[in-house]
Image 1 (cartoon, one colour):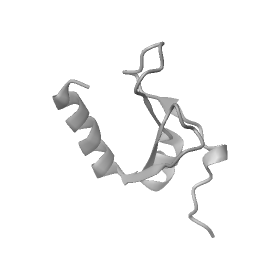
Image 2 (cartoon, one colour):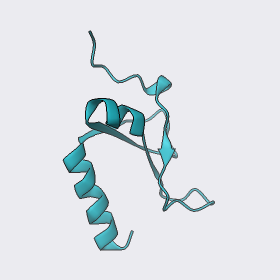
Image 3 (cartoon, rainbow, N blue to C red):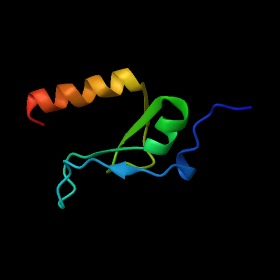
Length: 71
């Protein structure tokens, strides 16, 4: 069994903080996170770019940091 993440098959969700202009947005793949506990995160402007794979705890920390920073 492989644990490799299939970016093409993932269902990506844009941040609810994203505006219609598309500015500085991130996307994450909640289905993958639910199944594995690993949260894939990418830049919505670069869907073929790099993907950050974070633990659920690390992702929660990133969200908290962004909220505290007013992002």
